[in-house]
Amino acid sequence: MKPRKPIRDDEIDTLLARRYRDTTPEFEARWVALRRDLRQTPVRRRWSWSGGTAWIALGAAVAALLVVASFDLRRVPPPAIEPSPALAELFAMESVLSRGSALLDAENREALLHLPAPAPAQRL
Image (cartoon, rainbow, N blue to C red; front, side):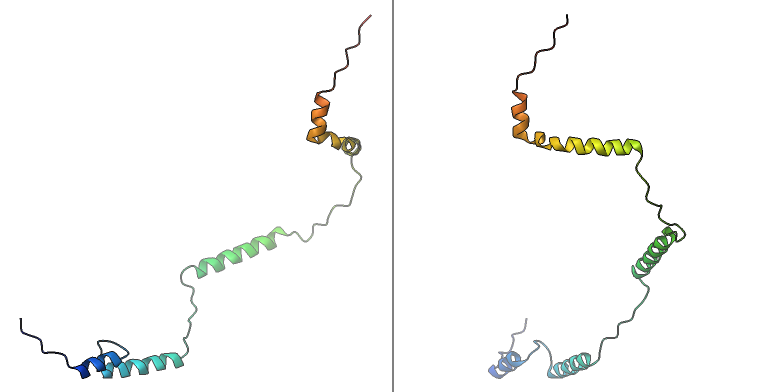
């Protein structure tokens, strides 16, 4: 192994003053010029149908087609009709039973469980 020559102070100062380490001044000048050119030129984005873009567009088109096909423009809403007698009876029962909603409270249910049950009527 051959001995290395000692590094002079001015070489160390030059290396420390460089912005880019282990490069030559010519390379640094070219790099700065290239970066300046890259900053001034706008990036041209090229749109393509590659990757998932085509699948997303196809899916959106199919979804739009399904939505349009699901609407039947000739269909008109049915006229409002009176409820059937059974449904009217159900509405009446619901209005009567809604008055007993206080019995659904846990405290009221507990009180009702401890009331004495009436004795069954005796047959003669």
